Length: 279
Image (cartoon, rainbow, N blue to C red):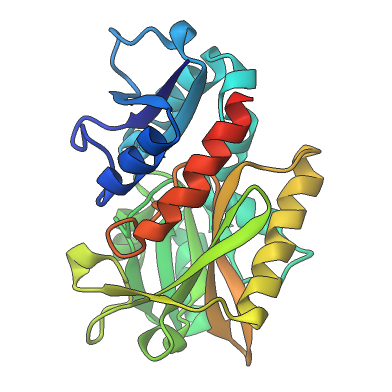
């Protein structure tokens, strides 16, 4: 049986730290190899299981990506194309009304953006379809129409209040694999930056699972289970400290990085998941 681990052309051997996952799968006798999601030479029908790991360029061509995902045998695709279709646009945050979340507006025009930023005073604006902090901006009241146009010209955006605790408490990620919380990572930006990614100077540290964070993460996992009528295979719940409690800032259900470079231990439960799904 062959497992295809899906990545992008700029990461042909997988996400940072992927060697840990390679080793964990090999130790369990799993024949796995890395393939690029848009490589026409890949025979997807020959795969026993297709596992998305680091196809992080999909946000550049989301329609093509979703068409590709839908073309696969869904019984052999972890999480599934229906999950990807819902989760690829941050508009999904508006569906999480049963959960504590960072207040979010989904906007399509410059006029809406100007009004939203004026209302919030200071706001974080992100492309509705995007990843890795690309296109994120912190905007203040008094934004003019021309500047707003720049942010919406490529498509819809989501607007949230600036959660200043990200600079002190950071962003917390709880990894859930097959319904079980397995790891917690705290990601902290540098200086006045709000993006926690390493390319912007951020750092990530593994910490013990915190019961309060786990409770919110499990509630998010339960909400996804309710929405799709099945337990999802994997997910990462990103949390921020807002108004004296942990709230969901993102729910990553497509290709969440496992942070294997700082949390190689995540490879084992993920490899166990693959073995279970292979049956």
